[in-house]
Length: 214
Image (cartoon, rainbow, N blue to C red):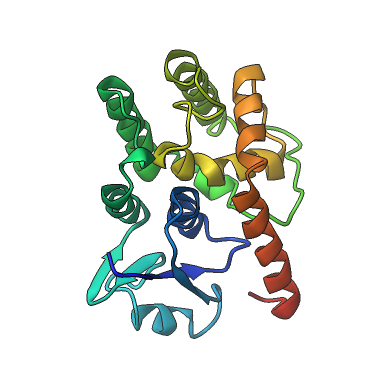
């Protein structure tokens, strides 16, 4: 990794996929530059495509290397800072499994509860198709915390890629007032208490004032 790679991300208010590697890099102490591209604009795709082969954010530019996709970037960062994955083999395997599950699943949560870190949008009722995903997240976070997280406040004790992958989900539970059991609620509180999360939300607030349609 070069001295200071560049992370191409989308509007911080909305871009859940951008938050994931951004938070992982911050928590790992990896210095990077960031380029924020406003989403939901006529020229958004063209601007992103100048950097990202997939035409999507995020994309990490490290010298002449481009790494796109949130989980791939997190894996790349973890090669530089191995502590981004749990040290224990079993915990590491489960951390990768739950990260992959987030990467490919929870479509109803994505569709019905898009990330918006600046809004408060309580749901009057939980849609039938959303309920099983909420239950799965509660069960997963409880299982990870109970089996592997006793040494710290995060899913596997110390912060890991798994927490980066679920950080946008934590914000969704807050924005939409989705139900959390006691163990997952404490975990969500720990994520939201991170100074890096406060930094992201503060930047999102500033960005929304500078460009109301961003």
